[in-house]
Length: 165
Image (cartoon, rainbow, N blue to C red; front, side):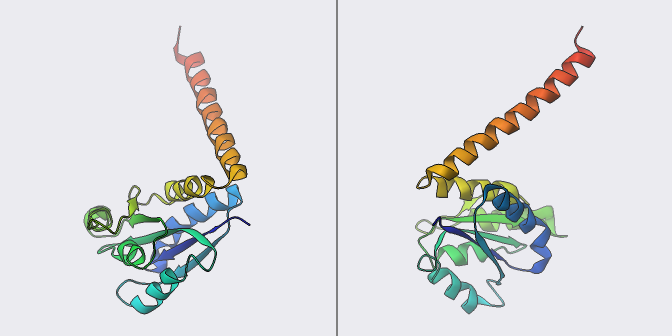
């Protein structure tokens, strides 16, 4: 059985961005669990989930948070599994505060960080990490990239037919 992805969000206001990740994981056939645990308001629950993640069948964690965005770091401090941080845009500072909070981790506690609101890329990065030990998943990722390339080339052909003379 393949490893699952643990998904934590600091607030349910992050749910639209989380859905981008879960939709991608669903498309790739990857299992996951989603929880609302705040680094500040429920630190014990976030730590407990993270500490037990490996033994509970998880292979990678994704943490979504806005503003102070300490969740990814709090998760990473409590597991040696790969952690992907997704800074979420809030009404303050267009998400730059969350980006900087997520990406500026101290040496020894790494967090891979994707773009602000980058739930889809977080799921793809999680899939790539899991695919290092799952050939079937690796093939799904190769097929997805080929399908994505085909879509771009179809759009190129349509634009070229209209404009190139």
